[in-house]
Length: 171
Image (cartoon, rainbow, N blue to C red):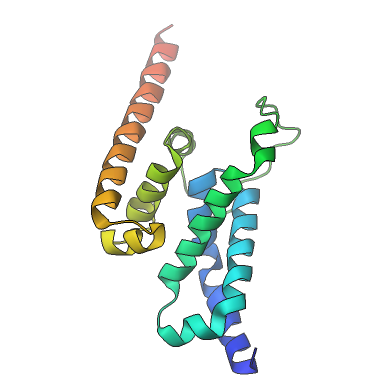
């Protein structure tokens, strides 16, 4: 890669790493996995940087790569064999930019992956429907329906959490 392309990639990666990491975290709910996903996405982007950069803005393409990395990670067979007993040897401190409530993260974890992707990109990353459709490689109508269904699941999960909290206080 030419030095100019290399420098422009470094600048892009420096500017976009934190927003990508936050989006990845909203998708997977794990800061360490989010960092891995962003790193993998940036490596894949680096390989095609000169060609992609010439075509215009690369934000959508980068989000699309990040989404594909996350979906690929969910398909890995070792994920389903992992023992998730809820016991963590030590609790990592949340990064300073983690202004996301625990209840929202727990509720997002209940939303199916494609619906979660639509909700996160549409409402957390504040992207228009057309850009979300490009990132998810689907139609705008699919984005709208997936986001609406995801919001329904999210609302139900948040309501359930609220009801459990209220019943826990009154008991």
